[in-house]
Amino acid sequence: MTPEAVQLAAHRGIPLGVSGAHRARYLTAAHLHAPVLVLAMAREHRREIVELDPTRLRTAFTIREFARLSADLTDDEVRSAAGAAGADPAARVAATIALVAGRRGLVLPLADPADDDVIDPFGRSMQTYERSAAELDPAVAAVARVFRLSLAGNTTVAD
Image (tube, rainbow, N blue to C red; front, side):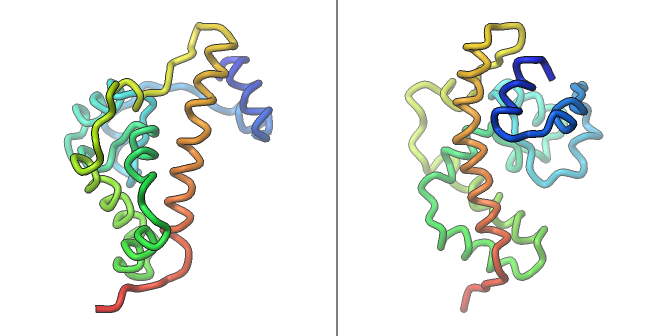
């Protein structure tokens, strides 16, 4: 991580040992086999992910897109989708991702599609790093909300 990113991480409570251990690497198709969800910073990154592995079309999002698509989902809708998948955590998460992916085309498009992107601060000013973090923070919180709800309890939906 750049020194600016490490500084921002420290302000958010991330220990230096954790941020200091981060290493950038080029994404390959092999990286895409295991994760159930892939979150990108920008639409061009999402596009490259789907080009590397077309099966990721419904499970790759920009982080802000995921946040936007899930914003209007109620807690009960998320719990219900997860609960319908049963008790297995992986199935619950997959059902939740499908719920969010299913909102593509149903949620009104953005006036500016670039609003689904997080600005890339690399090589830019600390102010740009702070802007990038300000774009990421609510998106990360939204993703965390959805998955906390998805994994909370083993509520199932009655027929």
